Image (cartoon, rainbow, N blue to C red; front, side, top):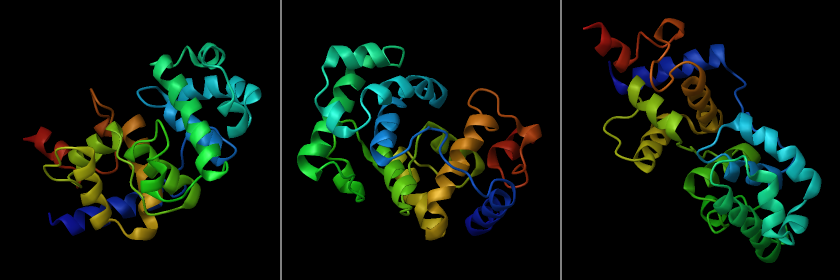
Length: 213
């Protein structure tokens, strides 16, 4: 199957079955999403959504979090993975946001990466979710699912996968395609034992076809 046909069929499937895919992180503004995205690294969205209500009640804005004491923030996020580093990162992010951007979240992916705790994947999430930019965040789910289906070929790292995906996905669909692949990887194409019996992509999936041989 030609790569273009594989992408077309995958896109058609997701458009029909998950047209309004979006992040499962709960937030009300760009600041809150940035905090939630930092906390979500190697941590489930479910856990992050349990932590953030108390955190945002105490620190509702970047200006308030920028003035927070590390021990106070740590106490609120300690059930998250790597709470020490994430405490430093979310406070540092808030301080940089206030100091360098007057509290307004930048929309450019490269500029977003200047904020502490915001790497390329997180910057792409923020650019896509907040500003609807054609940015493809590649996390472990996206990397795994794209490779299994055959949307990426021999991608050695998330950046290579990102470049292949944005080359073949129409620009206006890239923000939602990120969520298609994440949610498919979270609930269907799971890491240890993919639920191929519940998947509508088996006809085009390289992994499924290889298991039939």
